[in-house]
Amino acid sequence: MKNFTLRQQYVLLIIILCLFIVFFCKYSTSNILSLVTISKTIEEEKPLPITIEIMGEVAKPGIYCFEHEVNISEVIERAGGLKDNLVLSQECFSTELSNGAKITIGGKSSPFVIETMDPEKRLLYFIPINVNTAGLDELVVVPHIGEKTARAIINYRRENGNFPSLDELKKVSGIGQYNFKKMKDYLTF
Image 1 (tube, helix red, strand yellow):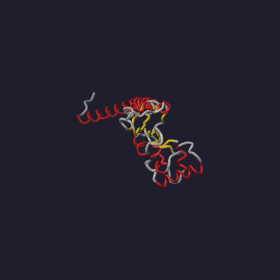
Image 2 (tube, helix red, strand yellow; image 1 turned 120 degrees about the vertical axis):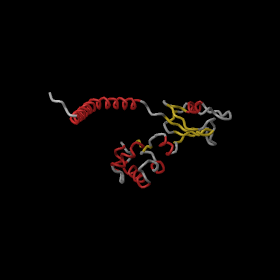
Image 3 (cartoon, rainbow, N blue to C red; image 1 turned 180 degrees about the vertical axis):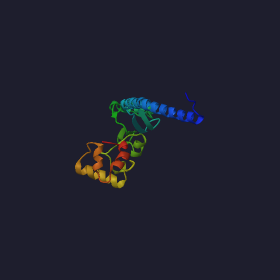
Image 4 (cartoon, one colour; image 1 turned 60 degrees about the horizontal axis):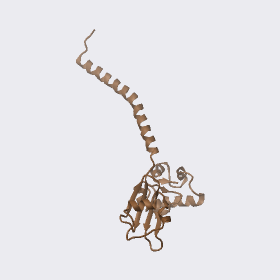
């Protein structure tokens, strides 16, 4: 058997390493893909938090996140309770809230007012903007939607009714596949 020169030994070593890397990548990629699939499944099962803003006559006004459906009573409790011995009816406390709600406690005309958080805050907390109900001021804060596109969305909705899916947005003038991909994560229907 012939002895290999130092140069031939290096070439053989490089070939063996390349084969090892190819073998490793071929069989480890399927394991990595399995882990990615498992992690995506776990993420999909976990519900998104419900984010509520509370203002007015509470000890600690602010924005609070919950991992479950929430009512006004729980939000007031998280905000440190009511100020100045303010009393609300039991009906007020049991009112269920949706993600992105803004509550003002102690208004002049009513004991509490439920509105929607400002669009900038909703996007900051990953609360999608509903294309079927959003006005111009809400749509323009979405990345890749300017005033012209927002008006086109509203006009399309006025003429054709609510969007049955986000994919329907591609039919709006000015929204192509590229822009749709960039904006779809910020929207819901």
